[in-house]
Amino acid sequence: MDLFQRLLAMRQLQFKEGEIDLLGQRIVMSPRDTLVGVTDYLVNNPQSIPAMYEHIRRSFGDGWAQAVKKSYGFSSKDYIKWLIDISNIAGWGKSELVKYDVDNDIGVFRTFNPLIGSQFIGKSSKPVDHIWRALTAGGQSRIFDKEMDWVETQCVASGAPYCEFLFKPRKQFSDTEKEKYSDQLPK
Image (cartoon, rainbow, N blue to C red; front, side, top):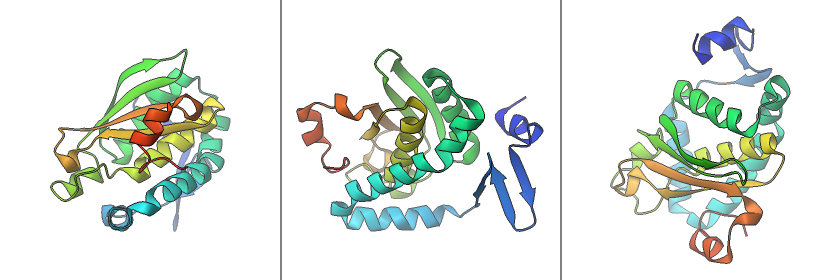
């Protein structure tokens, strides 16, 4: 039974007239262009990227990710597996975990055919998957009970064959990394 079928069977995914509920949270099906429009704004106003990332990261961690934690009580490794499943069925792209140091919560996550990045191929020389980074970091922060950050190290928008993300606890980013990714991370 795949994740979608399990969610339906456990009544964690419900369709009502005018509503869709996932894990007790109301969600919406939205065209890709909604997220592409927000991303286009961010690409054209790069100074707003760190603040937008942090706002989404915090609100998602305090909202939907809290419901996931309550419903599942994931270990860190199980959460990563679930994240791959949910990203695949939700349309964010085909994701995989490249490496993961479970003791230090540091890893590399890759997404092929990403929802947002694929719309910016040839249009940006910098990573563009800021919404995805913020959502995953917010969820991971809540599940792991520590401030986590994700930075995009490769992006299809700038010619890579996939989008690749480094994730780790916020306090473990070195000064050199903070400087390198200052256009992605909050101050």
